[in-house]
Amino acid sequence: MAKKVIFISFDYDNDAHYKNLLLAWDKNKEFDFELYNGSLKDAINSTNATYIKSKIKPLIAKASHLLCIVGKQSASSDWITWEIQTAVDAKKKLIGVKVEKAYDSPKPLINNGATWALSFNFDAIKKAVESA
Image 1: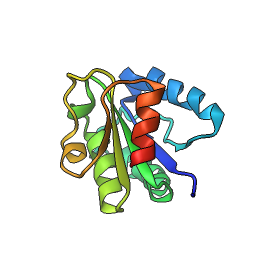
Image 2 (image 1 turned 120 degrees about the vertical axis):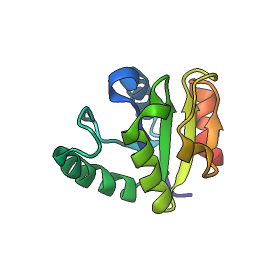
Image 3 (image 1 turned 90 degrees about the vertical axis):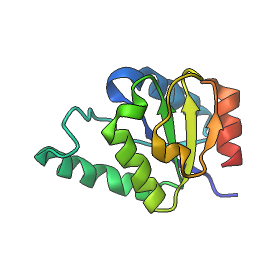
């Protein structure tokens, strides 16, 4: 079975430590993570956004899956919404990982058949990745 290449979508300002934990777990080589590891503080419609999108889109295209870390601010992030929609348009499989079960999920994650881990722990995430 081919190794899954997973693009990580996350709120850089609030959830980077969860991304770092995923990357630490990746040391076991069960996952192959891809990410744009830069801040997306620019507005999604800014002139710099075109450049940022040009860097992110090929990473999503190369991935087989998009894993979204659903933190407190994720549902209101235009960047996360764009990343998920870009993955949907490219027919990538979606995985949602809730930091807290009560946090709102980005709408394109809900409406496009994502596989879910409802808590942020290795076993739940591994199970969601395996079933996606």
